[in-house]
Length: 217
Ligand code: B16
Ligand code: MG
Image (cartoon, rainbow, N blue to C red; front, side):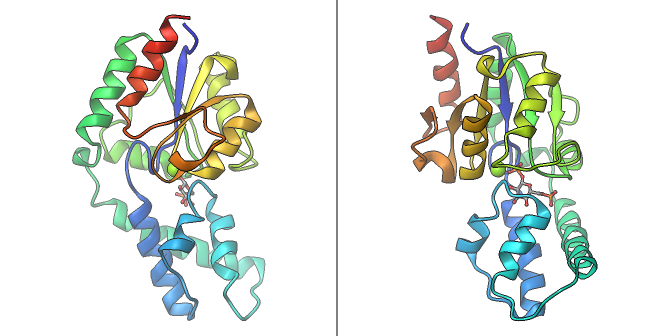
């Protein structure tokens, strides 16, 4: 079997917290008089919280100290977490849920590789708190996507080499990270147009075809 493990990005792959990130950043940008829209929000996919803030501040006229930036990022995170309280098991689609179960039944090891420091909170809310064999997230990395660290650590936690794992991503920064780490990647959503991805999926369920095709090799 070519792949023995699958490493999933969280936001935009397993569930959709992107709308909550948008709402929380938008409230902050409005208060500070900074222009912010869906296109700028797309650039924040897979990028860490502080790097997201820097992207938003590209349109800010003034200057801020590091302490002020940390305070703003904390304020955004508090708003974001209060929005996450709305999430429950219904935020995992039928397709995602049945695909995860089929991959597990096929004997694959499954991990999360997310830039988010709220990964465990989100997984608990959507009923997947104990599901994955390993979790690598924004809390255990020094460099976020497009650096490959979050995925190389996930592979290490699974006791697998990068070449034995498939990364599933919705962000271009995530596909870049997979390539840099020596991983094959399956792209969904926004990243599905990224030519660097090994597989460009129309639906999450196509993962089953990718894995079963590679069972033959
Ligand atoms: P937090 P992923 C990423 O999650 C989001 O796509 C990105 O928009 C966010 O800035 C980042 O997590 C950090 O999130 O503020 O919760 O630590 O796509 O890598 O699962
Ligand atoms: Mg993502």
